[in-house]
Length: 190
Image 1 (cartoon, rainbow, N blue to C red):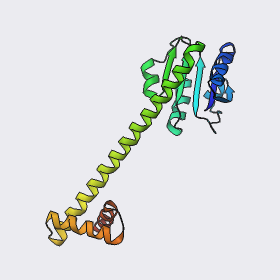
Image 2 (image 1 turned 45 degrees about the vertical axis):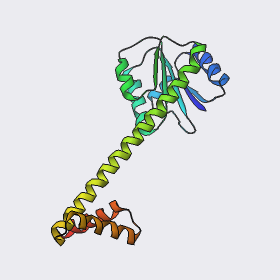
Image 3 (image 1 turned 45 degrees about the horizontal axis):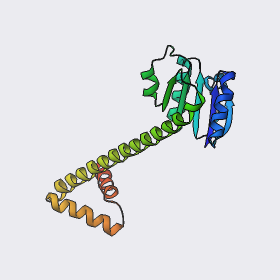
Image 4 (image 1 turned 180 degrees about the vertical axis):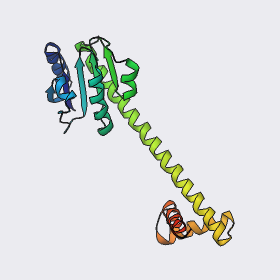
């Protein structure tokens, strides 16, 4: 795995680097915190971000929020102490692991493994939510199209559904796509 280290402590940077490399990973870049806050971090080929700081600042949270919103990457933060930013705010941001005063070589591997597993679980949940929202939206479109056919053609609900289904099959389209076409035409002439 390609790991980006963001570190404000040069003394612990070597510990982190060795632990990451000894576990078979590759450190693709090692930048200090000012690069993160300035937005100069390059995320090409990065699969995991590890941040090691004295304490999480508001500026750092803002920079991490930008990364989380635009890149699907697990992020692990090691902090020497809890700062002005609350732990709950860090977790809400989507950080996979937030470890306070716990940087020791033997703990790094299990922490990274848990963070990766949590990230994958979170991604699966997001995918399920997205699929559910899409299915609900499609169902609403189908119901709306059935309603249009029922009003305009005086069809029963079954007749409207069967017409949608037959049209989808004959045009080799999805039912939801046919429904959206009917809605578009009805909106245009409605």
